[in-house]
Image 1: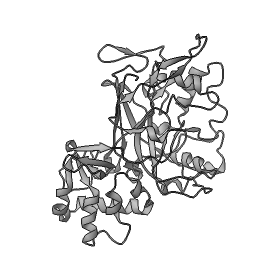
Image 2: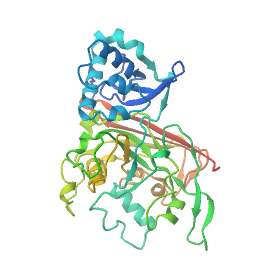
Image 3: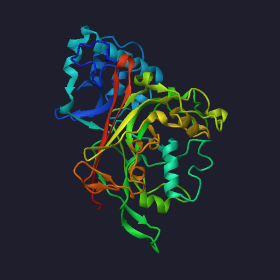
Image 4: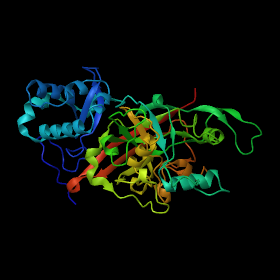
Length: 416
């Protein structure tokens, strides 16, 4: 289908992944103005959202709702997240209107910056970070690799979205180098554990969900209420030291093998931009989930591409995930745990049934026993110092448009 995006007075091609149907949010600064503030991407330009909203506010054009200018003239999206779903939807409608109607050209144009002239920063101040384990194919593969003598899936896996609490302080924006982690590891033939840099450093291709609209301790968010708190989506790389993880994860799960770095894309794609990408879940009838996990548990048709040093090594499909982001949020809060503006949770590795849809090197190389061959002829079981991993993603939009989710990239640096 040929894309037919709504008209805009900007010269943005109809097939641009950051057209007017996308409008993701980020945080940027410029050489002339190093103050960090909220920006909205349109094509290859970045709109200074707070500056334009201030003009609209002062002219009485924004309406009687929350002060968007104040929320957007801050160094993270958290103040905007705190305004809640009605404000998010109204803001998107207003941004769309000022970028479509030529009457706004003169007021908006001075506040557009070329993408190449801005520095992008971590878009949210991460409040809490949780990572889930929502792909049945990934969970089955990991079970076969790590527990070959047991059932691939643990007995609870199809009854609840399994997750672990990560470290919010080590979530970093795309482009940040990742230092090889150091810790304890013990191979199957080692008599005692040894200490040193990880030798099985891995990736995990995921989506991350950004949460807003805080809740009180002791309250719950239902599956049907979850969209009121799910602001948007980032691409997420959950870097993983498999040797550290294998030694430490019994009995309490991942710790140092995961907590050294988690990379996210600089742009947060609003859930409002992904309406055409909603798809049914693959099916949860055997066993049927408990009542609190039922409702509008939609999936998302997001296509991910993973490159290692420029060679595409995988194309995972998010549409195959077993658990929905709405179910993950409902489960996260069912015990009364509160959510905060800027909470982030990961989908878990996105993997499919075929080798070229596996979202981690652990699966792609079957724990290093089947190395990948890159375009330069070199091979990889796990990551080497100097390797660069880049993940991109897109989703279908209205009328044939393509919704871009940006990219997340990181380069491995030697252990310190």
